[in-house]
Amino acid sequence: MTPEIANLQQQLVKMPHDPGLHYELGRCYLAQNQLDLAQKCFSAALRLAPDHPQILMQLGNVASRQGDELRAAEAFRKSLQQDPQQADVHFNLANSLRKLGQNPEAIQHYQQALLINPADADIQNNLGNAYRETGQLDLAIKAYEQALKCNPQLLHAKVHWIHQKQHMADWQGLDDAINEVRAALKQQPNAQIPPFAFLAMPGTSDAEQLLCASSWAQQHYGSIQPLPAPSPAPDRRKIRLAYISSDFRKHPLAYLVTDVIATHNREHFEVSLYSQAKDDQSVERNAFIAAADHWIEIATLTDAQVAAHMRAADIDCLIDLTGFTQNSRSGVAAYRPARCHINWLGYPGTMGKVNNRPLFDVILVDSTVKSNSLAEQPIELSCYQPNNAQRPQADAGSRYQHGLPEHGFVFCSFNQSFKITADVFAYWMRILEQVPGSVLWLQECNRWATNNLKQAAHLAGINPARLVFAPRTSAELHIARQQHADLMLDTTPYNAHTTASDALWQGVPLLTVEGVTFPARVSASLLKRSGLQECVCSDWENLVKQAVTLANNPAALQTLKKKVKQQAQVLFDPLTFCRQLEQVYRELLP
Image 1 (cartoon, rainbow, N blue to C red):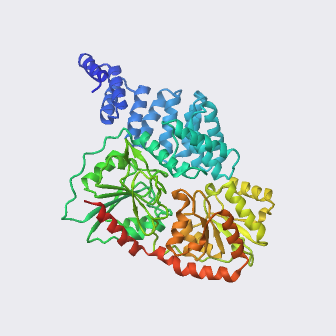
Image 2 (cartoon, rainbow, N blue to C red):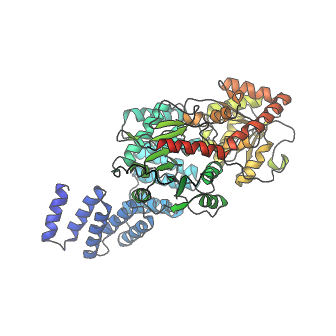
Image 3 (spheres, rainbow, N blue to C red):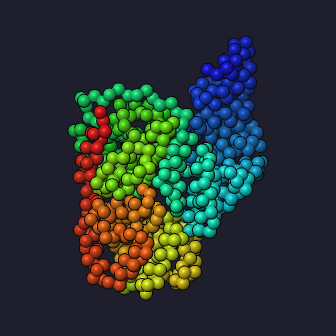
């Protein structure tokens, strides 16, 4: 108990009907993250001062911290009814609405907050996030630029600016901005740099990615008090696994891990899935539910509540399949609810350290993606990426239906546009230049990327019409249409991941260069596991040469395609993968 809390409690004994004292005590508890006590104090203050806007705001803050954004939004709305000129309450309400997926209304409240306080960099930054989440990338960029004008030191706004420029394939100014972020990471211990965006920045090293992850984890989870250590695992029962993810839905994760989870030997393992995902009523979500012994919805639960549930369930291994990606619930691991905590698959890198201890005990890797800069203990599998036995199927149609030439050579790269760097694109254009009549088939991610890539092709002396953009469609049609491609070209420093195994499933060869970081080595991992080492090029000059050679040598290409079709099947064996994984789980428990 702090002296300030003790003093306020003494004053309340003398003046129990003073709302100001209850309010100040609530603020002290909130600062200590004692949320139940804070809520009790603010509720007492509100009974004594009904409809007071600041008290209502604080009740909203408590509810938001507790993970109840519906209750938070209701309190913020009531506060604004009493005083609509509160920029901070408009801001807090907008943040809650964003978490509830109500971005259009969130944007309105960010804008209201800026009318009252136009120089607030955090409001501008979060407005940019809301624009980004509604696909308005041009407005997002402008909002981040305004945030940086208000506060040039707001590093996460700069990171968001970089990442969205990458999504738009607008490479102007990126090199300098990335160098500024890398310098800040080393010089500013409290720099807020989202780790996922940092992975995709060219030039970052494994060591820097570890530092970035640790800094982020410390800022977000450093104040969490772990649960007491669990008792030793009893021998009498099944090993209890808890997979946690925001992506138990129609998402690439579904095509990787559903069969592995379903294949667990139920005589020896009991499987719980903790789902942060919204109910999209998809076949993929239903398959996850069917694969689980226990299905737990956690979107309305705090990290502490999820951890308490896991401890009560006596979970042996917690496996985080989301990591530092969207809607992360990695804070659960900071409570240490299980006997072993495992980082796997969702985030291609280390999750760093919290208070000088790894946030996760173990990371599942293989000999290719493993690095020397991992906070966790690396455990090697034959290949870190699993796959279902089958991919969704559909009629692929004809080349003509997809805007492709009937007889010209089709290079493809269906990676998201943020993975395409200026250097990579320049190599691709050199390939097109040396293979007359060929086209490059890309994913149509957003209109800005489409326009910018066409312009970049023109500047490289390539007719922009030789870029063919595949519109977004169903997963089954997207996977099926890839059979019309002749050769896939990879990206760096963020490779194709699920996209790579999609191509290999269809028998499409993939050329990659093994990079220096985890996300830059995933394609090499898949190719080596398939016995296709010849597709892992020594450098980008060699990749260009090999791509041109294959394009101009139909017999060599057919031989390679046949080899891919036969040997890549090893990637789609969830039973074998699962048994290897289960042995890892056994060995991790004392």
